[in-house]
Image (tube, rainbow, N blue to C red):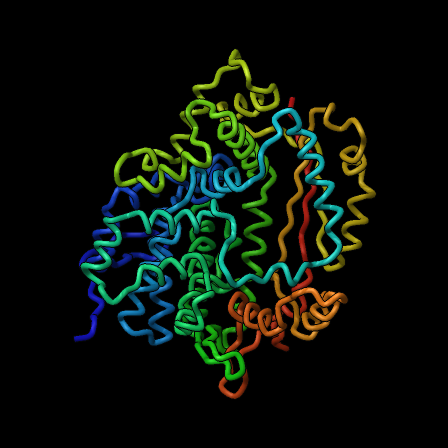
Length: 488
């Protein structure tokens, strides 16, 4: 007897309405490890600037589960596969950190040089400007999933593999589901496609330029922040969703029909605007930097019992035996801030300044900002180097001025037209014969990770290659910010 998807409960969401839950999802939703996500804000400290942005990883995860099922329904997935992708969507953020990506970046970052935080900030900006010459289109394509073990997706997989409760519930209600398939969908790992080619389309629903994760957080961030930059036609995108096997590459590619090109353009452009206006907002950016730097200090110095890397792994792997990981939320970080006072020894002055500023729910004041937008990376780079703020940053005694520089950039898409990509690939072929992936590896990666167009009489191709797409004209466009903040 085949599996039939049945709903037993529902949760009211102000973005999608009632989100329905199957029996296995209803029981997982009640687990403490999933409830933990109610205490982790989706946008870190952005609610200090956009007061309505109080939404959490918990409701976002349920929203992703809802959207990914709508996509699966349109693609006529079986009930078994619908349940598979629903569980992947529900669990995709279960390994997230306090303050979401702020905490994640703190654990992923290299060791903090406590005496040289200001020098490091300066050097990071100089390095980023120096490298800002052209889009690295080969580096942007990956097919194995995130390599850093502290990436939140890898941490989520670690949670699932060490959760007897989650695995028992899946085994009880969905014995046809391989938990490792859920893990591969969550991390975007395509290494097993040869053995299980059906995973390709499942992975794309959670890992591509047109995935359920992006769809939900754009709509949700717009709804809660009050900024409308992330809105788009969700119904139109799903209505035009299609799936087609690529005859030469031998895998299924998910994309939209030509009728959905307008909605696809809108989706990518509004994501670009949402990042430039909300995620990279001048105060949101420095708040994230401050909290990340303070957290890195806490990790390295083992300050106020903040877990170091090995301790955190232990928390995750033993989360059903003790409550340490359950408590590792936004509230944990805020509580730790108040356990550090100005009289504490061992805390560098610049770290203490950030701590005391965060305690006041404030951001450091911005001293100056320069912003550029365009398609000529080299011209933007030269424009930065001619500004007074860049000249100050590049001066020998800059760190003595007690300033913090930050560099941010966002582009409409990471992809370029196929002809341009092939030319770039040829230029990167090592003359000495060193190993380099065949071009087919990159072509597969482009289609799996990008936003594809599906036509009945053609092989799948990327939106950036569509003649009537705005993205084909905007793919080079980038918006870049160079900001300088006062530490005093």
